[in-house]
Length: 425
Image (cartoon, rainbow, N blue to C red):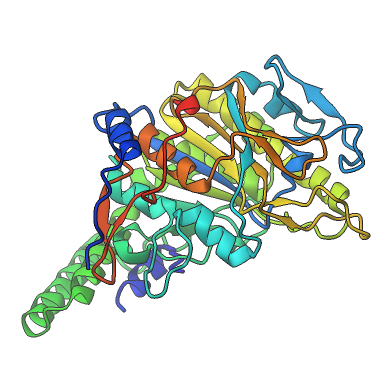
């Protein structure tokens, strides 16, 4: 994956049509999505890396042997109860749509992550772009000094995609990739003290001359990519762009409410970025692969998640940004209802849960139902491609829109089988 700081942003970028389906469902989707006014302008994805135990978060089974030790918090929404470890999030139940019947059937971390993040299973040589790149490419953003796709979290847990076939201009700009603390500083933004404005201008002019002459001899996309990346890196050094990452401008009380963790401060930074119309920001909370000691780990992680998510929803609401910001919270799959001998839960893609809020979606509801033992879906299975189509609809994008892939084949934003989740909109 192309994980970009300002410096690596510059370095990394140097280097048969299928028949269209006009079935009844496609015509219905066209009527529902084409011309739909955009509600959301930005997306914040809270990525729970490793496969969160959603049966211990959003779809608890109290009283059943599979349920584990957690109690539930009842909410004002009928049928919606959350884990006792999510009290701040439970306050916002009326804003949440909990999809309890997600199903992907991919139990391998890599394949499941690829599916959830791109909407497509890996296929031969096609380099599918992740959701962040798709959104950044489609919306471009209204803050030209800032990247369109920002990812916040430790490097090993950030999903190993580049921008796929969409090109380096929408590659993820990575922050906090080597950190475990909450500083989230962006390196290399400051100009060297030994280089004044005149010297900087001369250097950039010299680079431009070299590139112009090189382009005359070698009309290669790599030159254009390098020039675009250099321009983006320089614009990121401007004071107004630097200010977006200045968490110190926030009050100590608000920073404490988000939690002084990398994830909590990442949620706060995400709010600052969407206020500046960055189209897509993702914040990773790692550690959900709980094959051992599941309940202690989920309780610990839930406290971090609750502070970040609960405060984010409050903050967006108070600033009038929740309706224009679609918030997604999910991982690559869930965990087994049956508890293993190590007091852990294993991979379980058959049925799991995701949470959506803001962005014009209809909150205060539960979609789908699982069995009393948590092992099967009893009502309204939701494939991941439908969630992808719904994200597009919230942003005013036609999920049937095509981008040309690296193998010369047009690929839709959402899989041709995808249908918008009408209950959400």
